[in-house]
Amino acid sequence: LLLNTLVICRSEEEACMIETSVNSVRVSIKIKQADETEEILAKKFSRFLMQRADNFVVLRRKAMEGYDISFLVTNFNVEQMYKHKLVDFIVQFVEEINKEISAMKLNVNTRARLVGLEFLKEFTQ
Image 1 (cartoon, one colour):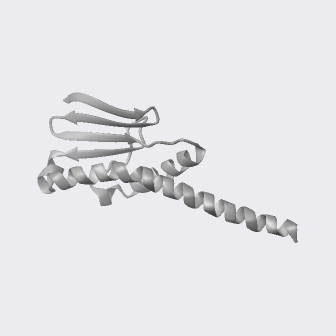
Image 2: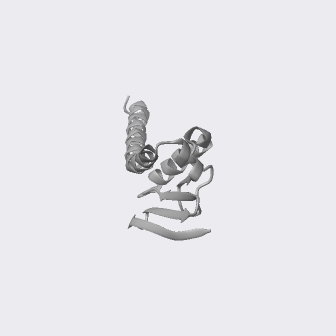
Image 3: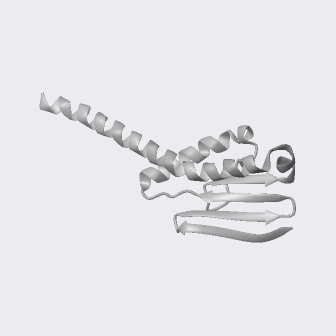
């Protein structure tokens, strides 16, 4: 039994869908991907997390279609965990994921620049 679905969009590339039912809530997140590098990093990062879904309890192994990462919070999760900590975890995850991908993009660009410089040094000698 599904109840009302809520979609919160910051832009077309960045959205959050909250689906509620009688005994669970599914939160699906679409990560902002401005260019090809961010698309690759977001895909790899979300795949990395989903492979370790058992360690996160509420993280789903497969995201909803059109979204990058999904959480499923059931009534059993709420009974076993502190509700406010569970909500804080999901909110913090949403806040931090863009920072993590931006940091990874900076690291990739820095390494690419260093590799390019080393490669071009061979031609200047």
